[in-house]
Image (tube, rainbow, N blue to C red; front, top):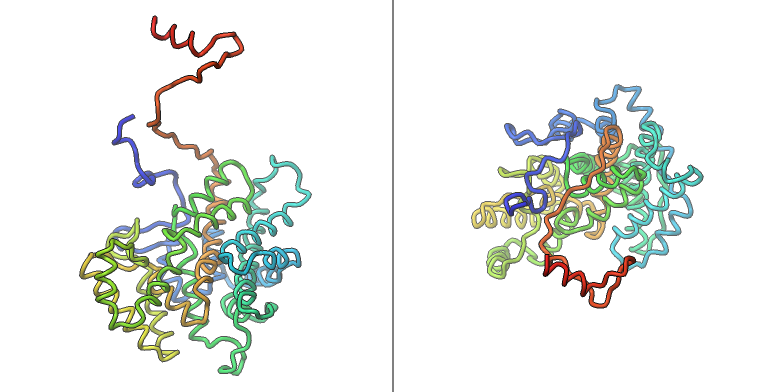
Length: 403
């Protein structure tokens, strides 16, 4: 095997086929089951997009109503899941409590199902498990943020759709609206963000989930592994890193000296660049439009000024464009989410894509087991070792020398 056979990071390697999503190079657009994601984000609730990714088509009115009824019935967290969240140190990263909570949900769901030989589950079981995870993750994320703020958890409301209920459990009463829930502008921006983050082909966390699934492990184990992959700053942690950069810069007037210093020290500027998109992340315009509505809603022109200045200066210097994390970080901040909660929000959205891929992998499975090119020492032996035939390492070396 030569050096040219190695594809570091599996760059350019086509590992399998998928019908879940693709990037259309002709239009530079991300397609979910053939639909451009910006069209879905502009017209659909996140529940309908979840149905699409799991089933292949958008739901009709009855199918959407049935999914919503099932999702709402599984929003509340069992006491033992709350307990494992409470046991997580307050200064641990929230992704640790999300990972642990999902593991406990899986243990509860799979209890009494038999041996590991039965772990993979039937298509019907895995769809039901996917819906339960989709329903429970908002409560997990909201519970974590409120706990770190010293606030009591808020029970879900069955009269609210997914996005509005997520915001309700996180923030509670909004005195600025008659209904007491988040303003429709905020709900719409949040709904759009969840759709944009829901799926993105064979990214690192999705591929992790498919690798685990290929061993015929269970859906929950695959999702826990995907959460671990998403925690990394080169993947899901990037939206959190964007806000740290914004906080470090402070305001638009500081962008140029900050950026020149960062580039001089070869710092990686999070929120820019993407392995797949070469002409800019196709999801950015939709999320930037949502951010614009939030900037106007909260009257925060300072956020827009910092955003625009950093984007302009970085693109002029490096020719690298923003990815989805760049507008989503400040958008989540304006909504009121803590910076540490940003990556758990990514989990809550991406669990739909993960589980769609898990079910696709299970339906046409082959164990994912790539080869490696060894570049360590040649074979050698331990002095004094004698194998079962009574041959010593010294006599082996002598025989090799003679032979």
